Image (cartoon, rainbow, N blue to C red; front, side):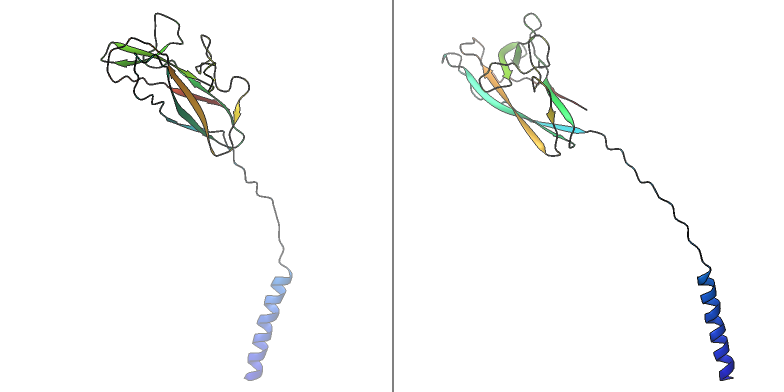
Length: 172
């Protein structure tokens, strides 16, 4: 009986080995792809001028920021519109803050700390940031300073003045 069991085990092993010896394989490449589109997000921090004294004879400067995060290698530019209260009877570049439904305080937003290039949408003498070429995203937040200025000696009524300017990021 012991001999019979040995033959059975040996027969089973030989059968397994024979099946393994005649097994074959085939291979193929599996392609894996993805398309990554350029993408950007934008946040802003306000240009908060604080208290303006029309009688002081001094202009008032303040800064804010537009912060853009774009996927690596994505090029972009930043445009600022004329604001919700822009003058419709004069130069389209005149941004104005509004108080008391009818009082306006003109101001300007600039690309540079020297207040020489108006930051706008590229129309009516304004410039888009950057003025030539584009910025390139690297996947991190890139802050761009907005330089604001209220001219001295504006005869305006007391009140809390505000405006809303839309920042538009054009990217590809």
